[in-house]
Image 1 (cartoon, helix red, strand yellow):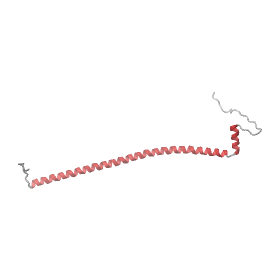
Image 2: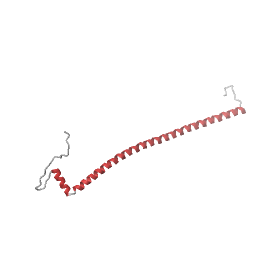
Image 3: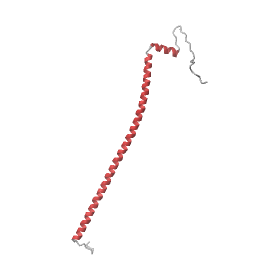
Image 4: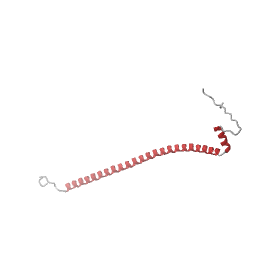
Amino acid sequence: MKDSKISVIDNPYYQKQMAQRKAHDNYLKEYRSYLLFRNVLGLIVLFVVLGAVFATATNSLKTNSYRERQTQASAKLKKVTAENKQLNLQVAQLNDNDYVQKLIRKKYLYSKNNEIIFSLKDITKKTSE
């Protein structure tokens, strides 16, 4: 301002106006700071909520998958248990000598001494010819 022909009159009115402008500038600075803080906080909350929704959806899908696999495993277990019972029954029957003799005689047409075996067709079967 040394070269300027305009000079500022430093009176109480000017000082009051400058104090008001400075107060207003400080208010705007604080308000911008508040808006930035609010926006950043809003984004953080948004990301946390989206993360929670994503985690919940993922866990739900995994739970459904596990339930489906559990259902399949239960069905397989029932099938294997029934098969195991059948095999245990066969083992028990194979431990019975009378059953084993009947099985050998039927399957291999084995006969006792002086025994005659007649093989007949099963007349209960219906032919579709």
